[in-house]
Image (cartoon, rainbow, N blue to C red; front, side):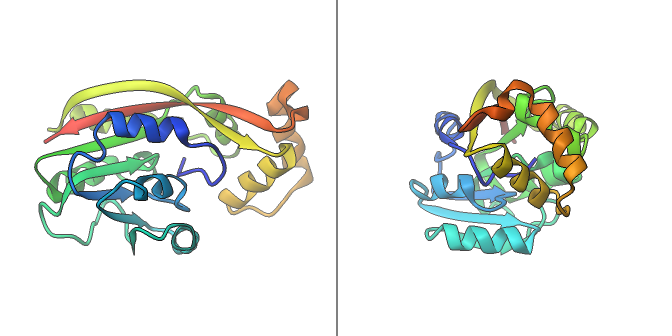
Length: 219
């Protein structure tokens, strides 16, 4: 699951700061999506570069964020020299690529003494379960955690926390989900999504909880 275009983001920003995302002047965000979290990082970062393989998402991020440099790139092939950044952050993106290669690239571009932060959804989070309705990401999420465990990187710190997504209604949420998965609207699929929401389907606003993992890795 990538950066979410709708939601508060407050919990993520606070936790990232606690984990030292601004521990050095040069910050790289891998998988910035449409820039939801990039916006918050840019408020405090001295020098921020954000990459994403999606041209459409990058265009939205550029319109959204003034104080960042954007580059179309995948985490498995970063177009930067060795030791270019003090912190590398995977924003809900490690499981969307070959996690082992991406961690290797992060280890290459981070400076000695720097840190790699990985924020990933937990498989059983409320919001993540709704993503599974469209595409089950269980194997990808578990593979990302396995790649961390198997890598030469050391887990210096780890936590799990909840973050809120807020939508005006179930219809705004449905629109977002179809757009994110690049699918044409389908009445039957939407009805199934609303059934998955259960009693929350009538809520205005619709607030969904997501369970997130955050790990700080050292080289």
